[in-house]
Image (tube, rainbow, N blue to C red; front, top):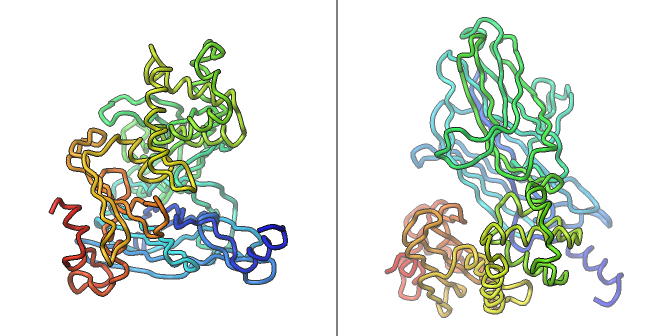
Length: 488
């Protein structure tokens, strides 16, 4: 496009599309006890930059997503919902949220939430988790802990976000970024009037999320609040986290009697990014990096090195590193890069850095797609994160599927698994544009319907009679993905 006018015309015709087939959504939930029926709240947050906004007028745009929510028990659907969710009409892409409530009996459920961009149907994502609805008996109980982005007083009973006179906006991703200074949470306590009959003590604290076998995790901060016993006691509590360093944490809320007896306990995992209070900066305050190898790197080399390091970064550090690159904080980048390799190899940090960059540069060249560095593609990212696979099988001649690759790791120490598989495919057919479709590695993308997605050009050949829930495709001489994935 040669002129600004032509760019604006294109936007007006096509709308705003930042998605690149990667819808960014946060799905969370909380369960509550009610005199009529216990219920679950499902919270949905859609990042506006990951969906397509189409024009509804000359200067206004709107996005629409389809949401499917299913509750299963023993493989059977016991409750379901499907609806269309629209963003506000806006001049620029904006994030939008939704909340749904569903009454459920006590029991263990599987929650499935599928989100699809109605303006680009290929842009979709699915979330699955298991939860327990357990509010039987008259003992002291608690609702789920709910982290909040904000709250305000409200008397609007028609607003689904209003509860007990408060409008509560859920915090997406359970993540507090660099600008967050306050942790706000909501919790309900039940049956204290019957079980306690007097006032009780709510103790709330933040502790570091370390090794699962650690019996004494580090306590970061603690608070107490005495409450009068009632059938339902709503609690809205704020905690100052401005000096909580970047890391992984648990919020814990305990209910105790006047004699300190523990009556109930709930905890919730969250992440914190606080580059303004970085422990690494304190630990390395006396290091003269002017004498270290990072001083020889120019700004372009620094950014390249940090981008190549992304697969190895702790989750809690990703936002901090991205912030330093956006702000062109060269000194901060040098300090972080040196501190990372000093921790990896205290005696020879430069040697460790150089050996890693040799591999990263080779991966960049091998998997470069023309749109981004090779180590930023899915294949490059997985290679640097987990190392070279033991076996790679490429299939690019199947008539009913785009090119795909199956990677196998015979030993997978990261999660203590064996025979771990990754399958990548190239639906766009652009050179080198392979995307992760499915994996058996714990913590990586797990897509039960990966065969349906791979063979989407033959949707009528699903194995079995369940067209909507079926995951396998019918066997065929020219359909080898399942055999390759399962080692024949």
